[in-house]
Image (cartoon, rainbow, N blue to C red; front, side):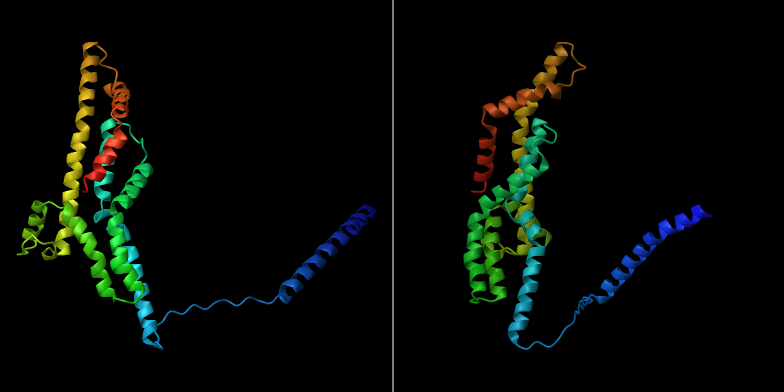
Amino acid sequence: MTKKCYNIKKILPVTLGVLFFLFLSLEVSHGQPSFPIPNVEIGVGEAQSPDEVASSIQILFLITILSIAPAILITMTSFTRIIIVLSFLRNAIATQQTPPNQILVGLALFLTLFIMTPVVNEINEEAVQPFLNEEIGQEVALDNALDPLRDFMYRQTRESELALFMDIGEVNMGIEDISQVPTTVLIPAFIISELKTAFIMGFILFVPFVVIDMVVASTLMSMGMMMLPPVMISLPFKLLLFIMVDGWNLLIGQVVTSFN
């Protein structure tokens, strides 16, 4: 009995202290002012001036342009040819994932920026700056921005691809003047032409490395080493050849100058 009383006396102060601190925490929490919950409303109201409507339309137009920017970058610039040629080079040397995809895409993006700089400058001077200075409207700005891109694509597109899509689309126009070619015809014709050019360059890249593979494979067979993979033996010779001919400068130089 004495032991039980002693335990109760020992636990009682601790219990009272815990209850006291809980009571204080409740008082503090109730005493703090509550933060207001924001109310978000989406609706269509009456504009106070035409400038508000114009600003909203400009924002919507900008968001639309940004949403289709990746498609424009991939299909209407030099990016397609560059990335395909770089991929062919990696496959021809048979280095698997070296250089990695991030490096190839980054190199292709900066080369695209380098090649497209005159076009971007012309778009900025003829469309972006006059539009920002409120000298031209949105439709005129869009037409002025599209003209340099159309001129670039027209110069890189073969007449056979243009004739193909004009025949499919039943467009009865000549192809002597760029203004006569519809944009809906020019874009797919440009993409097909870029793919064809990239595949031709890829074929030229593959030839010397295939010759090395054939020589190494025939040498291994004549030595009776048929169980040894030829790719493992030919890889150092491919890298040596690529280094000796200064392959990166030669390849990048040919790819960039091919757009002239």
